[in-house]
Each structure stands twice: as structure tokens, then as C-alpha cells.
Amino acid sequence: MSKTAIITAKDVDVFYGEKQALNKIALDIPENKVTSLIGPSGCGKSTFLRCINRMNDLVDICRVEGSIQIKDQDIY
Image 1 (spheres, rainbow, N blue to C red):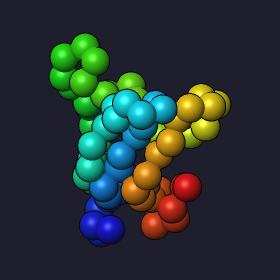
Image 2: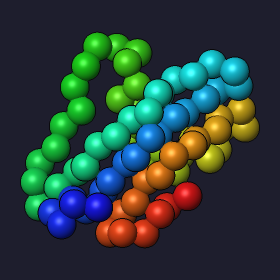
Image 3: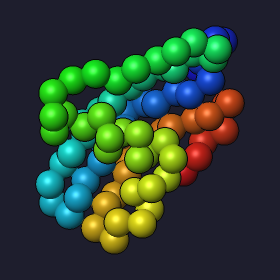
């Protein structure tokens, strides 16, 4: 993890059943900085945010692979 990153995502894949929604996402979100996710509708912004706050756990057919760390602790 980068010394300034508070959230680190490595090789994050998200599947809804057989459909892959995110593919190998890697991202460091720095501490004490404003960070935004921008892109067209349907590109995975909300899906990634739901990975960080564990809301995808409520979706029976959702599977999250890879690593997301907050303050050096893997949240999965």
C-alpha cells in the first residue's frame, strides 16, 4: 500500500452471476484528498463503491474477487 493511500484496491473483479461487471480494478485513494470516480453510465462506478462499503454482500449472485484494503486491513 502506498504511504499516502487510505484505500487500496488490487485486481478487483466483480461478477453478477456469470456476468463480469468489473475487471482487474487497481486504485489507490489518498488520505485527506477529494477523490472522484467519473465515467459514462454503466461503466462500474457504483459497483466499485458498493465493493468498498460492502453493499454487494446483500446481492446473492454477486461475487467480489481481489483485494480492497482500508488502512492496511483487507475488508474482505
